[in-house]
Image (cartoon, rainbow, N blue to C red):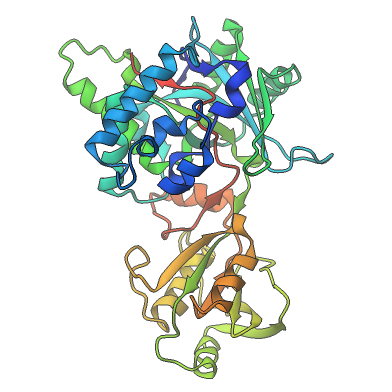
Length: 421
């Protein structure tokens, strides 16, 4: 069962939370981050992407950048922009992509620390591979700040009593309540002070949550857990109760989360003409010309393709997928095997420079734009995977193909920070 614990979070004062809370480090490049927090000394990007405070040309992995990370993080605490809670608490973080609408969908996550041993023992389950270089970069960040500055996005199988507790708390006025100016997404935050409520939530996770699932943040999870293991090995007086044994997460019930499509664009047709390419597709798909208006896939095993100014519906033929196999059922796997590999000759999605990936948050108009301007030859829009598919794959010990899931909204960084001492 799943172990969570409260912690003494470092949080911004209410008057600067809008300026301090930032988008995560990995959704912005250096120049975008520099522009986003121009004139805003409070932005946590000064900590998560500290190269923006150095002369142009510095990378996020440079020694000078890491030194700047520590300097800026210490300054945020010294200036009183981040203040630590006196006692261990749990928190609730809610997000919405359409906060001003009457029927706005909000998702409510519990902010808590997860146990590093649960990651090692696969009670915390993953569905993506991680890269050692990215792990090491995040590990350096955790080591130098001695903190989990940014949370990891987890999901768990919904539990009715947990939902009930969260509903009662969120009926009260939140500590933070703002709409981010960059994307218009809504963010709300509550502090759980009542010790009995905290104890009951910890108990419910231990009793009723058999596993937690990494939705977004595989490299941050790995880095946090590995740093915990490092500190354990280097502490001759290790007891298992030290704060470094835990890392910060926001844990959402699976039935509140929405997974967005993650689409593909390819630079060329591998030497084929348009007619030859469509004929080759016909061996594994039923192809229908949908005209010039954007066409979005409507169901599982259906893709849409944009080619030479027209949209096509691609319906996978029976026998090209296996609905009883957690990997074989995935539309990204069907496309990868039957089109990207067999027809276009793209063998490795992680390294082949002929393919790129576009998060569904950008809309299918972005696919059309990249083909129309000649940058790409063809685009494929995917039907999004479900939380059930993600959980099935994680439970089976399998790994999803690269660039399969896109979760939105992203967690805002800086609403609370966990230090390892």
